Length: 106
Image 1: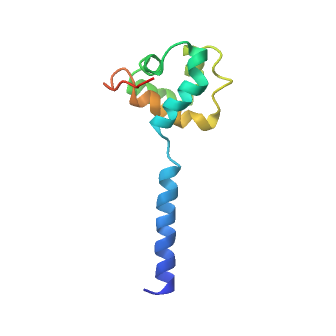
Image 2: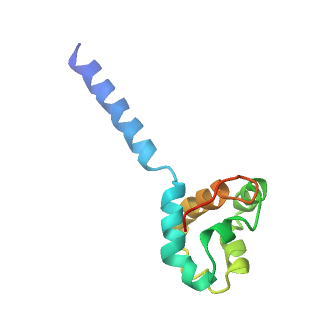
């Protein structure tokens, strides 16, 4: 292989690794819920996620109303949920929604 080909392959591999670490994660969302929201909400993450179906959570997120909905379910939580946490907490809520059949361990 030429140096240029090796460089291109290395760059593609680097981009592939970077893009997977940049995606949201339901497990991280569960940890964030337990750390940032559980005390304010007063109920488990299972109850929080089960407040809506997966389609409803998707509609809420696409409308940009996720933090507002979290505030409605858990008054006072809006100040604790930063924008960078939203994709992870959304993935958690979506994965464990009322119609998903999944039950979180928190």
